Length: 133
Length: 278
Image 1 (cartoon, helix red, strand yellow):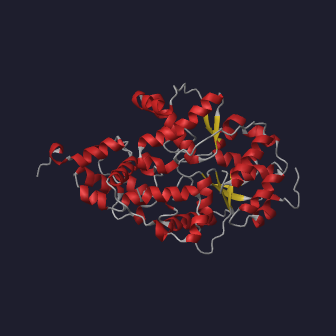
Image 2 (tube, one colour):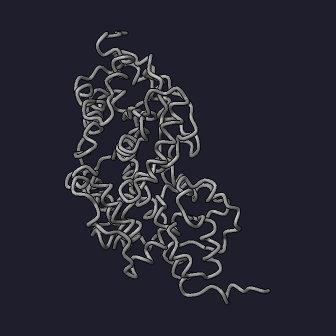
Image 3 (cartoon, rainbow over the protein chains, first blue to last red):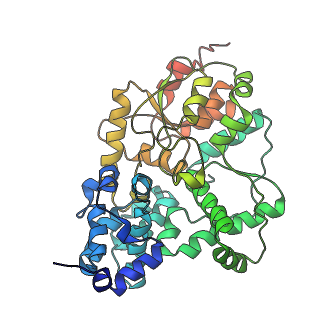
């Protein structure tokens, strides 16, 4: 079967490329990003597989994944990539895309009262970033 | 630094004073957005540190940043303005000033190891911390993205190890130097982070370390808070240990603020009580 980039690159992928400033087709699936990722054990889809889904224009699978929400943006993947793809930047773009479309992931009411005073402000801000808009 | 990282604030000021570095807090500074802003909006993530840079340029001073995330974001902001004319115009419009971009941006660790120098530091030592075995933890944002922060080696940084060795600490090599501690997920995915941190603490224990030394307020809080069951590894800021070696009283005082008891390690090795004078 012949796959042409012009045919599978949809508007969604173009938007992710625009938001991240990255070329998802540069990835040749070596898997170094997934090998280096400290949070890979928690992810439902490996980082390099997310890249593959984007290459194939699979919007639903990429957006439904928990993976971008587990990314801590430690940049390990971006440093490791032999093709210079900023994988963490692409995870940012996925979160940005979801957020712009109003997806809510966190229920603030579920945080226990005693936790509010204990958590550093930065921790709270980061919680909002990961899960709400 | 005014809140949960008070120990870092106090020890940084005390150590800088001892070394003759005059500090002036950036007036009316704002949060740089850290890892949160760039997930929301790239423009916002660049504009927030730009506002701080504007104030710093107006002050006409160089800037020392003790936090790894603030350092990384501010460097990225300056780097983007230098290399991307359109972004620079956008930022300048929003912040309302034309940047000269002549400010030197240092991380505190870099400044002490490179500009002040180990020889100068050694001159101020009152008591060496000879008995202390520790591993140095740099975390993710000090050395990454490497082309931009331009700090030390990206896979095996040595600045902290050198600083610690200069005051007599036995800085042990270990594999998790630049691993991420997951601090930005500490609230939302606590279990995942406990998992990461307990792995790191176990590794430090295996390396015969009694403590971990960091240069980032978020790493310090996270490594203390998210240790696994039965783990009680003290996590020090590098400035605290420098302060102890310099014999600074205010640093000894502030050690009480730690969540994990530091007393046993300090009393056994630093000789604060026994006074192992040079």
